[in-house]
Length: 309
Image (cartoon, rainbow, N blue to C red; front, top):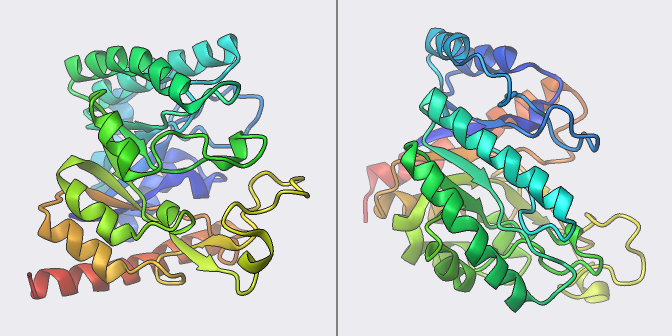
């Protein structure tokens, strides 16, 4: 198992700059953000322009730095209720698959999503028609599609889960579509699921993993309950009673998570996903946060390897 990081937090750096920094600081792998360059929302960076890819030059830069790409990251709603928006997301997912194949990257990470205008049951049926062709296209090019278990509640007008991959029940369903899990323990805390207990039966179906923590904000849940804000939803991403933190600064049991991955034979990349508001505001602060997170994960990995179950 290797420790890497998702490039999205370093949105003000170019991909060559990130690759160079990763190499200089000893990261063997990076998960590369690849949202569309021309996305008018500009919510997420396009570190990798998958539609205008110079695979040879990037491969050379990676080789010089001693860094690999663990996965191409394009986390979007593939069940978007607007047909044009949905088609655009599908087109970009295909471009990400093509880029992964050209670069020899083993996976493309994304979401299932949800059609928020209809029932969960209907969204499941829609996904069953959409994802198997993507999986077939990807596998024919030597690429796997991995799904992160984030709730994406900000996509739903009332804050309900809008990515139908957030629980072990849904993992069993989505594996039938041919996809793999990109496991992130932080997303289980807010829905009352033990991240370690949930992971244990699914390590063999975990192709990639992300490392992000959650801090519980004292007393807040007694006002809103698990569902968060109901009256004031001016910020759809305000979780009310918890917030994301770097690994080691929240409640996730990293010793347990890492040991479970190691004991289960996980040999992929554990990718630090930096969304910590305390360790942000500048490139330097974000980089320091990523390095701080690595220390927590290294300690957990060393412990797991030195005293196997």
